[in-house]
Length: 256
Length: 256
Image 1 (cartoon, rainbow over the protein chains, first blue to last red):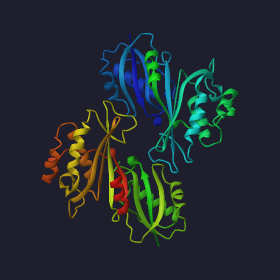
Image 2 (cartoon, each protein chain N blue to C red):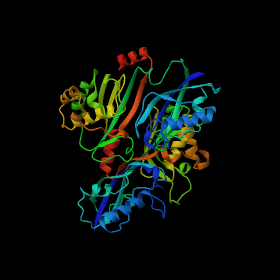
Image 3 (spheres, rainbow over the protein chains, first blue to last red):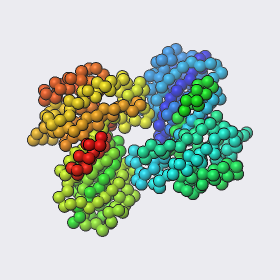
Image 4 (cartoon, each protein chain N blue to C red):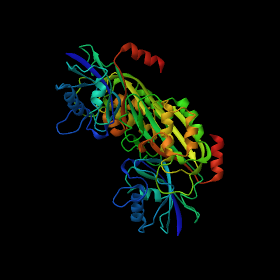
């Protein structure tokens, strides 16, 4: 059996997240059905992470075991031909037997997108979080630095599947404005449930002066979810980068 | 009666164009219904131009006569509160009695958006025209220059409502690449039916080497629609700028 890794991209608006759920449209469920149709065998997918309902992925990785005879350079076309237009497979390759899209991942980057204008954008209801009052990006950037490093992120984790540890390492947390959009990009070795949306929610409050940038330190140190700001809504969240190779990741960290 | 000009923005995906049509969702029809609901009187709108089904507007202007007592600074909010999220009114102001969104317009800019990549974008099925083969932007830019000037545009006009003249003035036709997107921005004093989509279709063929840049001259001079390339599909087309003031337009032309 070959171990096949797919790189894909999807618009999450019409899906109840990545993970397969009976009777609900999900990205995993949709893709597994199409893979079964094209390879004639049901093969469960292992995805690089769970994304919530309405969350998007500019890039996403999932692997499955198969003895399909479809060549790897043809597989994306074979899948895209029958996939809905909001899921696109961009690459298929045979990887080592022990490769797992989730556990082999060295680092992931998520980007949270705010649309910051007096009026909403008619194009972005499902693609960004609309914030009317101007965000102070300088203050957000200052607050964001407190998220960087290896530390306990219990204060930005919502209730969910129990985890053995709430310690994670965040490599960078960048805030930038481009026109009416404000982007928060967070890269880490792993993420707790709703962690990026809670980081975005805390930085939103910093951007509006409800929290001082230094309050982020206090919130994280409390390890108490009740100390922080709200969970930002899902439609602003995108998975934006994935690293499976330590050397490649280290190059990326040096080059940015 | 006040003459009220609205500036709006809309995502055209769910509409059969601007113009009111019985039994079909259109932007004009939707907006007129909401204006009637909020001002209690039906007031027909005059729009700056007809946009086809699926065409978008980053900016659009429409005016109507009304004696509503809603203050102009509150009117956008009053309309947006009940409008669907894909139509957003950004400004309302009282204008001269003889102002007409269509006839008072000095210049309009449309932008055609190509998504140029091996794979489609899951986010852009309804927002851009996907072209797989790389576009030669240098050649497109060279070809685009032939569209500039006051001339007969019969060769890039599709059959539609009869017009007295097919002569128009194009002030600029710019082509630029940003990552996987290629933008063609065309500014003119008026446009014939499907003119921008035909300009985009001709430049697409130039970008793929099916036409040499100089062929655009020959195509325009023929005044024959059958000489040129295809009509590019509507979802890539956006109305992007409107000028009602000659001085403001002349400043824009100098500053760009």
